[in-house]
Image (cartoon, rainbow, N blue to C red):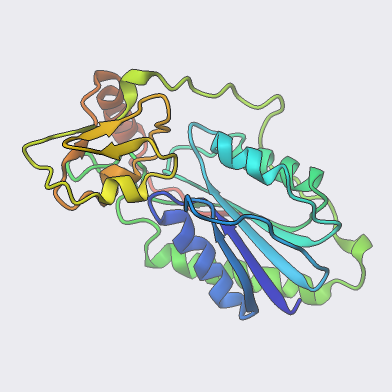
Length: 264
């Protein structure tokens, strides 16, 4: 391997942090970096036999983000090598890593390694912290360890036939996706909002507009919480009882620290 492609979707920055740390430790020349969170990205990557690709996605309810998964399914890799990574909020990654494996395999990639890392949960707050601050320094050490395992495997490969199938946990058919109801979108506390427009800029689905007030298209919102996490005044909040109830449940059942899992 001589070069590296990075492909990731990271509305709250946790997946990006992990993918870029792994890339840094591989010490390969970065060819292209595709942030699928960006609304302006020209996503038409090319793959070659001497270029390794890392694909990283967050986990939403045990599955991959739907629209991002659709974009990945259009890739054509022709036996290019790939590392796949999912990032979940300390609950469970369920079928997401298997789903990502199946997508990239169908695109023609050869999977070198896979991993499930932990990031702070999208619904985490100061009062109800769920995996707060993760990935932390210990997670980044694990990124280094994972990168070294990837490099060792690549160095030991003699030909394409040695890239064997990885046994990835998960179930097929995958678990049913949670239904996103219109009541579950974040709202704006007008008493705190200063109309800075950051929420509009960071929303990956163009669900937020700013006129005299902040307007949220609830049908486009995916509850990624990019607007909530990035609002400098704390004006973007969830007021829906179902989200608050879910946050309480996650806070109570996800307190035990989970560690990254590697498949190499």
